[in-house]
Image (cartoon, rainbow, N blue to C red; front, side, top):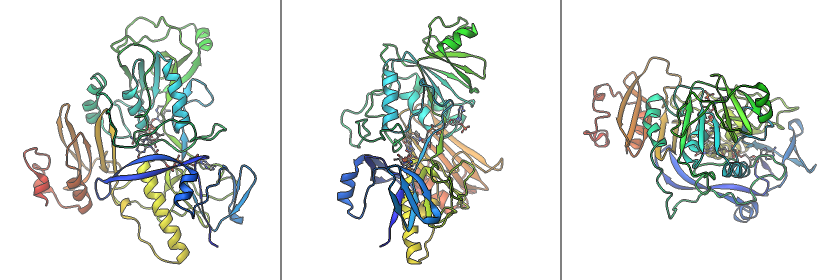
Length: 463
Ligand SMILES: Cc1cc2nc3c(=O)[nH]c(=O)nc-3n(C[C@H](O)[C@H](O)[C@H](O)COP(=O)(O)OP(=O)(O)OC[C@H]3O[C@@H](n4cnc5c(N)ncnc54)[C@H](O)[C@@H]3O)c2cc1C
Ligand SMILES: NC(=O)C1=CN([C@@H]2O[C@H](COP(=O)(O)OP(=O)(O)OC[C@H]3O[C@@H](n4cnc5c(N)ncnc54)[C@H](OP(=O)(O)O)[C@@H]3O)[C@@H](O)[C@H]2O)C=CC1
């Protein structure tokens, strides 16, 4: 009997996504729910869930060995082991990464007692946390000049910044979407990470610290953490730490408060805090699959896969955060370690595995034609399409912008009269038309002036 193994699932549970709406041809919005493996097996009797981590892969013998010593023979294997946080410092109890429900709970426990939190990083987790945390001071250290560099440019960042000072809207009383909870039971017992959190992960969580102060975010731009010092190490230096006052601005006075941990930044400032969140990206979880096997790795350390999700090792496929897309991508797609892409890759890898077994040919899936991501930052709907940050376009491109303060920010990336990408913040209603314009590469040179004119109904225009 043929066996296809999927290495990389949670010890006691897995995640199932329920598509709610097909936003666009290439863009889906969905909710994700953690399910016990029992529920999964009763729904899909052909699936057998093994509750043990993979310890070793003997690819030449087509065998997986789990931590309890059991050996599993496979005919085809798909590695979906995800990724783990790339922390600025490993093994420091005050430096936390957030990946799964257990690490989110640990963070929540620390936050409940915190007066000040230092957030390092400028991507998805930092953007979400800095906005969501309440009742504590937040010092946000970013390498770049502006916030959210993984998602948008300085213009969009300017548009979003006022939200940090605005009052946060109350959470919806009734929630139509399923949300994450942090109930026990989804991680591993030995401290290893479970499945990554995803859209809306913080909605079910209390991200309020214990202090009755209003949200106060101080951004330290263009710096990195040089070193992390425990209280005693800091005291031994006999220097003073930087002060953050309530409005979030520096004052000349040094910090009179003593903190359990300090971060020295490359800007020379030292900030004391109760905890540091290292939201500094991920490492693909390629161990233990690579040791003793001849996998080709991508530049980011993922298992390199071809356009059939095949790794360089026979009958081993990979999908999601653990892999690096090694095929020549369509001009409007790039890999980003996101739930949407993990799901699309998993689904496509399954089709490729079946096709390879049957000796059938299979076309690259349509979802890899256009990068499309929908999310929410600072309470704005965020849609990213194609080369939304002009990735790889060099200087040979132009940007069209439309911005209404507090309402919407629209950026379109054009090259040779054709639309290459777009960033849409707020309820712009432009996503469907822009998706089509990027996909069909229509020459828009003669419409250039009208494209972002709010008085022109471009949906009608291009119908
Ligand atoms: C806080 C947070 C918020 C996010 N928000 C969003 C969002 O809003 N939108 C979005 O698109 N994406 C979001 N992401 C990213 C998204 O969650 C990931 O890209 C996605 O979950 C990757 O899926 P995966 O299946 O590849 O990996 P994972 O979800 O990490 O699953 C990998 C699984 O493999 C298991 N595993 C690892 N090693 C082994 C082993 N040796 N043996 C057996 N099992 C193993 C792990 O325990 C885990 O269960 C977020 C991520 C985080 C951390
Ligand atoms: N809503 C969404 O779509 C969300 C998605 N996610 C996903 O979850 C995963 C983890 O999120 P996250 O950790 O935020 O990762 P991201 O990859 O989104 O962002 C990491 C950020 O940290 C910066 N960085 C890297 N190393 C350092 C360092 N040593 N010092 C300071 N900054 C550094 C990176 O800058 P540079 O790029 O210049 O290296 C980048 O700005 C990602 O795959 C992300 O896509 C997470 C939350 C929300």
